[in-house]
Amino acid sequence: MDKRLRDAPVLPEKFFRQHGLEYYATGENHDYLSDEILLVSAEEEANALRVADELFEILRSTAKRCLIDPSRLDRMGIPERARPLVQWSFENEWDDYCFGRFDFAGGLDGLPLQLLELNADTSSLLPEATIIQPEVVRKAGFKPLKNTVEKALTEQFTKIKAARGKAIAAGAHLGHEDDRLNLETLLKIARKAKWQADEVELPELIFEEEGGLLVEKGEDKYTRYYYLLKFFPWDWALTEEPQLWDLLEKLCTKNLVRVLNPAWTMLLQNKALLAYAWQDNPGHPALLPTAFDPADLPNPALGYVRKPIYGRMGENIMISRTGRGVDAETRGDYGAQQTIYQQLAPFGMDDEDYRYQLSVFMTPGASGLCCRRGEGLILGDEGEFVSLGVHSQNGSSAKPGWKFW
Image (cartoon, rainbow, N blue to C red; front, side, top):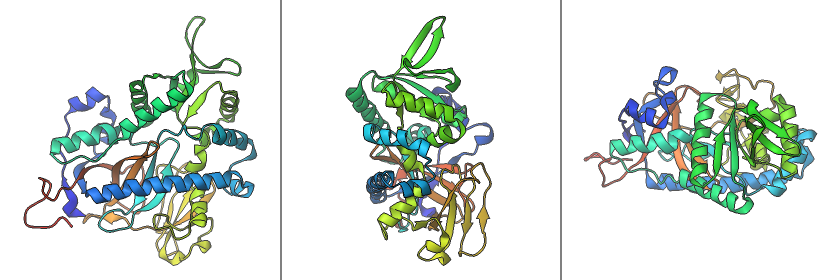
């Protein structure tokens, strides 16, 4: 792994100010951006994109099967009150998916690329991958990845606009700065596709059962929005803000508003789907054995990870390396959720014991890679973002006198 690493240039403060991304390089995040670049081969990049496309179709097919099987929905923790909207969304918004991110173990140094999870609903890392990573790699003089995230998103927004018209969208989040910056990046891309896309505070939104989604712009002046680009999870609305869920259900099913990503994506976000994907595709090389009970894994002694079905940021994770006892565990806000057990996967590691986690953006096809790394068994919110470049056997990224592999 260490032969892949190169020094990363320090981007000037002016760059972050120009793009409004100071959050990622100052304060508590001053060391969030790694001081190294990780080089991948063109073959590794192509394989990751190919596998991601294949897995996305597998998970979508699994979600379809779950939707018609009440016992599966029960096991996934999808309550009866949520199913009408999810079903309606599946039937009417199947092609409206915009943006998500796969997280993988392996994929480097000959290790198999294996799926950890799909951040299908409100995934992050968009500013880092589309703005920061290309600039780091450019300044370092390495060949960039075939990153088409922005192009693919622009095409998807254009496609949705052509199919439905009235491309006027409100973008809303829950107030976290990282969420705001991811949403802002998404809104800028939507504007490139000729959308009117405005960032608004969630409390500013007015949900009218007959008038649709509104924001007051002055005395007796309102702007009507036909789309909601949300950066809050569907499962959060369902469990924490049930009134919001009910309002969205009414507006969506009356065709007064469309939400991106649509409600059916909460099935993809649900990690219990990974257990059913394994049941439906046993032995698939890119899927890790996953079950609702560790005893149902093919070989629990190989170790496993316990995850809450809607957990985020590495919270409430437990790892057992041998299937006996706890080797690592985190706390968080998701401890009361149902859990799944996933076989422990090998990660690429460097000499300082950093674990490297590749990610692939889905927009909705596989369109770009990025990477994070961290110390310890669990990669949480404190992990570093590592820019990726492409190794060239004949380029400046190769040192003379030794092979890359």
